[in-house]
Length: 192
Image (tube, rainbow, N blue to C red; front, side):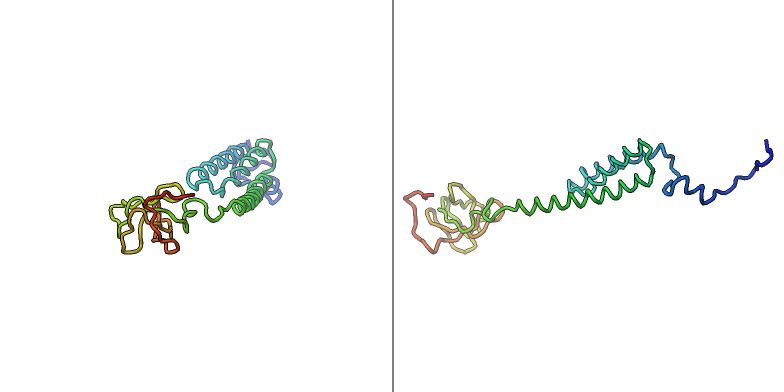
């Protein structure tokens, strides 16, 4: 059992043995690394899709973990796998970040898109706008659409009065009597 040159006690590894085993060995069997990388890729992708809501923070690292898993299946050195994971994730993150910034800068909505386009336009009161209007009954027609209306002034704005939209608050417009063209238009339709 104990022949010449054999000892009962285990000999501590030398520096050369540690280097030969790999700098990033971490005590994990080399056959387990592909599954660790796949698990990390799936985990990062799921966290990205469910918790962070598509901000693309973890998506580059999910992709780089998947590439590291492929490398691990081909028995590429663990150092290369970690380099691909960290370096590739950072490179993909910055490429994706620049692409998203360029896309967001190019696709800003011009002024006057959406409900804010109504600010400054004139309309006609179809249901009187009362001061305070706690019942939310006041209505105007502006650009062919009927909108709920509020007034910041403490005066009743009667039906047929031409009004100017000063703001949009939620689904209602804030109006004031049009001082530029204050004539009442009770008997005629608004022309576009």
